[in-house]
Image (cartoon, rainbow, N blue to C red; front, top):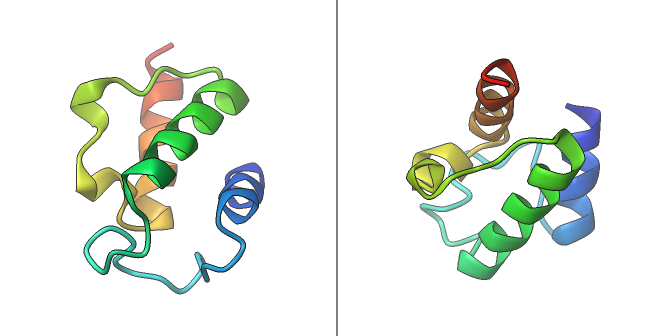
Length: 76
C-alpha cells in the first residue's frame, strides 16, 4: 500500500488520495492519469493490468486500486 501511495502521489501530488472517494466519477483523474498509473503499477508490482481491468470502478478509490493489484499479484 505504501508503494502504491508513493506512485500515486508522484503522479498527482495535488490529490488527497487517502480521502478521495470518487477519483474517476468526480473527474479528479483523467484518462492520461490512468494510463500513467497503469504503467507505473505494472512496472512496480510486476503485474499486467489488461484492457478488461480498465473499468472506472478499479480506479475510483485507492482501496479499489489496491484490490486490483492484489488480485493480479495472486494470479501470477
